[in-house]
Image 1 (tube, rainbow, N blue to C red):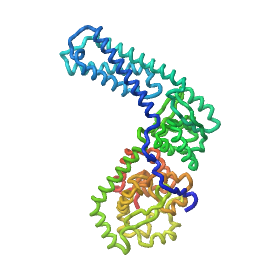
Image 2: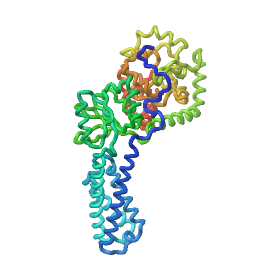
Image 3: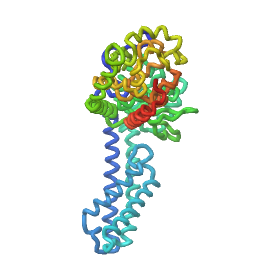
Image 4: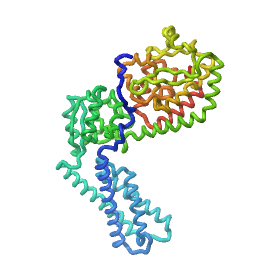
Length: 475
């Protein structure tokens, strides 16, 4: 293998997994902020209700006599405010018009509940109107005072978020001014785009972990060709904010966040870093064990047919390049003659992949009769469930390639090796063997890495079943 293979010594996890359990950076501050707002809203609503009952028209009703109904009132109001996103950070807590609408909606829901639950036990109109008016006044006032107190504390250096800026030198001053406008961040370090390069990346993230950085601001120019690096920020528990430039393309996992008056693409960190990946790994283990047990009769039938069709072993093992460019043995049912690899050199001139990185032939003379059938329905891939069980592969991921193909990689192609290879993947369900350009296939693999989620894996698995039975592009 050439020096481009970027062999990695020692164990390094999948790009999407966290190196140990990590809680989202700054989570304690965020929980305290939300808790403070909820407590203030509960106090405001309780005070508003008690004053409304005292000064409203007296009327016998379970709503004014039983404490349990106050809990219902609080639950509905807090629930509606939360649903409207008014406990999120930033300008959300200061969005007084949205607070007005949320309180009004909650009061309307309470009226509906009162009518449906106790149609004969009314609450006076004056009590209802007073409660609505006082709720709006008290909650908005409490939020205003909370906001003033927060600004005062931040002006003295307290409850600020520690952030790190990665940007090009010519944009540094503008980006610093933009961040400082929010008056809630402390810039603890600044670095250039090269800090996200492969050779510097580990040192950068080690620094971020050591310094307890909560959020990273990265310019679009620094991240646009490295969008897969977003996973590193997520698995480190660090919220990523991508500073905009003209022509910016939105990342699929991002949400828009306002920094002053400028929209900023933000990729939030999960509460528990890497949790999705461990769900994926658990799913792989459970499914591989169940499928191996259920398909054991099929294995026996296929093995028998292979032995009857041509001389040689039932299984075929081949060196493939997997996670972090490490070699492993991939298992398949044998679909070719026993000296197939030696014969490939004579067939290179007939390679149907245009750029020559992969080797594909539609009518490959090395394939046996039963092999054609197995390949048509992808049954030759079934033994790779053992690779999944051993942790060398996943059910879904970029396909592991032979050494011959990886030796022709360009540096940009090695991102494929940063995640566990899979039995099936986005490339396979988007055309399988019909894709005759390696670059097109790599784009699909990178799209999979950038967009990965448990739901995406499930979609690919379902599409795989459809593609296999329709025999689309298989040979």
